Length: 248
Ligand code: ADP
Ligand code: MG
Image 1 (tube, rainbow, N blue to C red):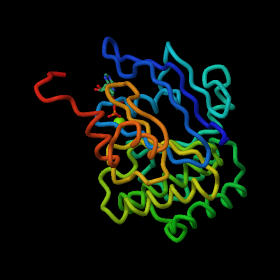
Image 2: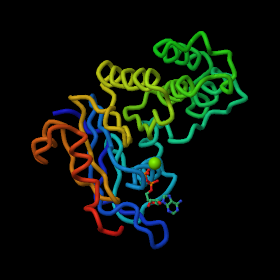
Image 3: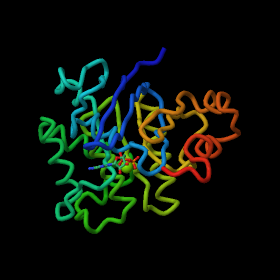
């Protein structure tokens, strides 16, 4: 049995009267890339905001590596690395400065931080660019720096919120491949939110979210069998498209 890095149970959340998540339950295992697939407005970013404690849910429970995020916040959040949908790097600082700042926030000493920064940037072929201001980097390279930053404190779970949106095909591929390698080499658990079905690999797990509800979940092969679909594109179509003529 693989280790469960993230467990979400019966989670609901509303913005005022607008329900964004409705009784969501899911699990993400170490050594697996789990794709959170859903169209715009499905509730993907809301779920990430609850996991990262940007918002608090009144109903439901979230556990990171067995730590309850409300009652054991510090232990839980130490296990978590995040790449948000909008970039959160400081454009006027260098790559290294951005990373050192994050390391300091996590209590990593300067020497250890520099060693970790080197390790992660080298893995992404970005070490030579460490002195450049983030402003000078293209979108794909900024995303790589954000992934390196999210991993500095060696989290068990990495959340990525639509990390390839707006990037060209080679940059998208590089990020998809890099994250899949990390999952395998480091037994990392990844939850990757997207609406792009070509980012799903054959051995990924899939959670289909639509209008705040989980419509399907499991290994891709199991979901294909359960939904009688030939590929992830058909699953997406079948579970997230409203029948024609039905107002939403
Ligand atoms: P996704 O990331 O899957 O596109 P979101 O989590 O951003 O979906 O949004 C889920 C739903 O909640 C959508 O209907 C969206 O309009 C609504 N929503 C998101 N953020 C807010 C907010 N700050 N205030 C009100 N409604 C919001
Ligand atoms: Mg979103």
